Image (tube, rainbow, N blue to C red):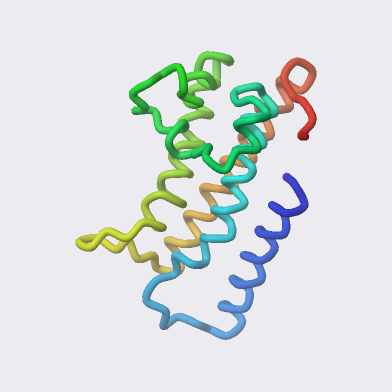
Length: 157
């Protein structure tokens, strides 16, 4: 995790601790609590995809690369699918890809888009659960990197 990604996690932790300390239980939507964790997760995934050669340096540095689009297992063009590439590179790659996608979808996509008929408001326990999905994904990614540290990882630009 980069220092910037770590700072976002710390910011989210500070916001959470402040809410708990002040006993704030009257907020109608705790989605904002997930936002710093989700932003850090996006950066973490981009770095991970680059480190294991699923994306190149140009893509990693691009402001046009979309994690959710390429991580989506339903992507029409499989040659661009990070999900498929990860699934193909390791016997447990598909399992990891599923974990990464599930955390992405539940902790970012479904809560940070506005749907007029379904606002996807989160209670405090639901927000904490979404943060847990992100943490679980990061932990499993770390285990994957440990298994492949000699063959895949490269330094960031």
